[in-house]
Image (tube, rainbow, N blue to C red; front, side, top):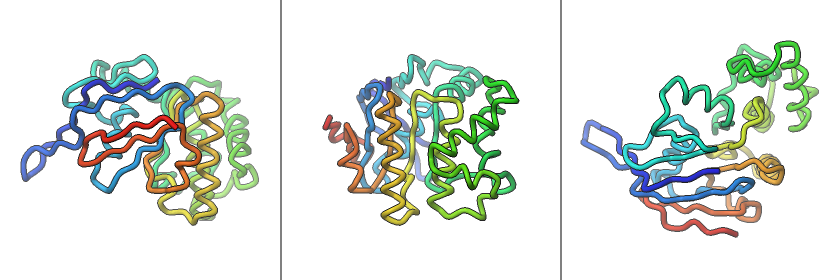
Length: 225
């Protein structure tokens, strides 16, 4: 489902070129829950951005769900991303003026792949999946951090993606809520989705099927558990 071939990512900075990733080779199969681990600055976020088509490699190729990130045009990549990727952010990124259910409906509105009349019922089904259907019409400000993160997960599932990436999704949550969120990712992988989570959480090791370890932008381990 995910393949990185000799991937290098270099950013131009005022201090000169900075290599965030160095010659990374990695394969992740469908249905795996991969935990990407490493210290801050190790390249975890860059790796997730490349997998999600948010960024492109400087050298090498990233192939996800049969599509080459490097070779796709911006327009084709945007359409592909909407149909195949679900992205969960550490700080939720919910629109504050929209209710929970409206936030979940947004990806459906953008892609237009589902009839308009079915979008709210589908969003409610997803909120029910994450245990928040009773909070559907509340604004994000009225929800706890854990509730907002579960809304963000429901939003990531809106277009039935094949791949889900999550960058430190439990970083702002208490341990009990973090455990609930990680269990959600485990269940999604069990259904056949490929889930890639960048995390510092030690508990992810008991749920993941693979750990991907990075250090200074280099892959130092990709252990299948």
